[in-house]
Image (cartoon, rainbow, N blue to C red; front, side, top):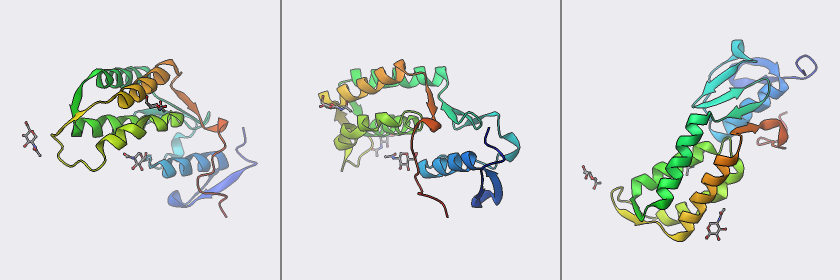
Length: 164
Ligand SMILES: *[C@@H]1O[C@H](CO)[C@@H](O)[C@H](O)[C@H]1NC(C)=O
Ligand SMILES: *[C@@H]1O[C@H](CO)[C@@H](O)[C@H](O)[C@H]1NC(C)=O
Ligand SMILES: *[C@@H]1O[C@H](CO)[C@@H](O)[C@H](O)[C@H]1NC(C)=O
């Protein structure tokens, strides 16, 4: 535990907190993950927009049921011949949300974005080409095989640089 020997000021909450927790909050801010002042909950498992965040272990977990739903949705999408534009945006948004736990899968959406770029009518049918099929299947495979838990400590992230 590094509670006393390393603390930092987190301005949005006007609080001194363990440095690692401040880092975690800044990481969420960076990713745009909403969070509330959870001072009294430190050390417990917090449900945050579907992820279980363990502030002490510094992990974010996608619960098994949500993980399975996402995998199914990706596979069904990949198996379709065409989908409406708004469905492309939905699967992209859902995948994007899961990148909080699976940041390495971000390249999997590149072809999805390329496919919908410049299109406006949400009802328009958009064909699902091989690249989109391959990439969504690749994402589904990786998500299915993963533990669903992301360890913030294992990566060297300093999204905001060194705070001064
Ligand atoms: C992906 O998610 C991040 C925050 O989690 C957000 O800032 C970004 O706009 C999203 N991108 C798309 C294309 O939805
Ligand atoms: C899309 O389709 C739905 C149902 O078919 C319809 O109610 C809606 O008005 C359509 N929207 C656009 C922008 O075409
Ligand atoms: C996406 O699909 C294309 C075409 O199959 C492939 O070349 C590319 O490596 C894939 N990218 C990822 C991240 O799977």
